[in-house]
Image 1 (tube, helix red, strand yellow):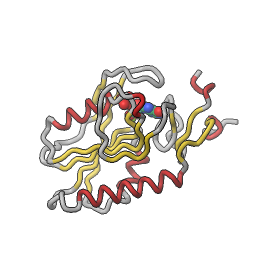
Image 2 (tube, protein in one colour):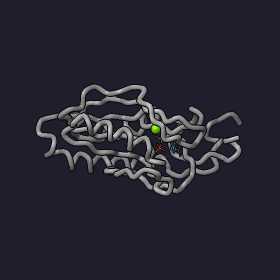
Image 3 (tube, protein in one colour):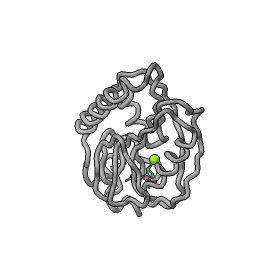
Length: 184
Ligand code: IMP
Ligand code: MG
């Protein structure tokens, strides 16, 4: 059957689970920044492409003045492994003096977020925090502090809700695990 959902062996996070957690994260972010912003907007930077669905749901539940921007970073590697060599393919405008919330789909080895966070920090933002929908702590090579984490997940390659395998499956409305035969 040529449907996307048919390629999954299980659903790890349902639409309902994602929706509930995204609202919780947004409420916490709204709470934490309400007093802190001091008249400035919160600059929410989404890492493309993986964060596009998470970010669009998240910001609609953050009740603060926000500015939205995007970055593209790529780590060269094969299908499911990061190489640790990160290239910035699209950068953001100046972040100096801004309260920055970086939004990522998943922290796996940690190489991508370590690199991007260090790069942004050097540009002197007023504050810098990371919100990642997923965390796979068992895969970490580089320590990364996730200020707002949606879910810790086991060491399984997941797709959907923005996350891809070979550029596909981003449009699935939930997060699931591909059938092993889909990797070959
Ligand atoms: P890193 O290994 O922490 O640098 O993660 C780099 C990128 O790999 C993430 O931003 C994701 O786009 C991608 N990635 C890591 N694990 C998964 C997964 O299970 N499914 C889909 N993409 C993943
Ligand atoms: Mg990514």
